[in-house]
Length: 154
Image (cartoon, rainbow, N blue to C red):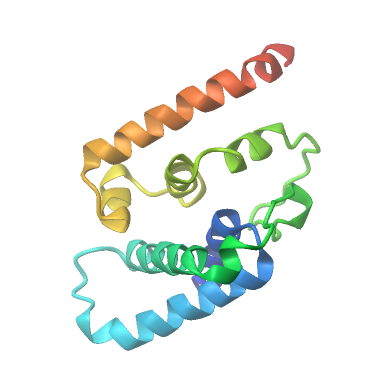
C-alpha cells in the first residue's frame, strides 16, 4: 500500500475529479486487492493489476446514484500533488485532457500518466489492444485539435 497509494490516488482523482471519492476508490482498490490476492497469478505486474482494480472501483463509483447527481467538475488546483515537482502555471493541457470523453480520458491517463504499455492497458481495460490503440489515437486527434492554437503560440 505504501508503494502504490499515491499513484492510485492520482489516477482515481484524475478519473473521478473528487478527492473524497478518490480516497474511497483507493481504499476500495486495496480492499479488493487484499481480498483477491490469493487469485493473483503474477501474469501481470503488480502495478497493472492494481490499476485495473482502481479503474473498476472508479467505474463502480461513477455508476452510483450519488455520483451521477453530483457536480464533480475538476480544476487543476484541486489535483493532488504529483510525485514530480510541477511549476508550470499554464493548465491548458490538463484542462483539455480532463475534458476528453471518459473512454479517451481513461486511455490518456493510463498511457501518459501511469506510463502503462498498450499491452498493460489492454489487460487493465479488458479490451483488445487495437481498441486501446484506437482510443489513444482518437484522444490524440481531439487534443491536437483542441490545443492547436495553444501549441502555435509557444
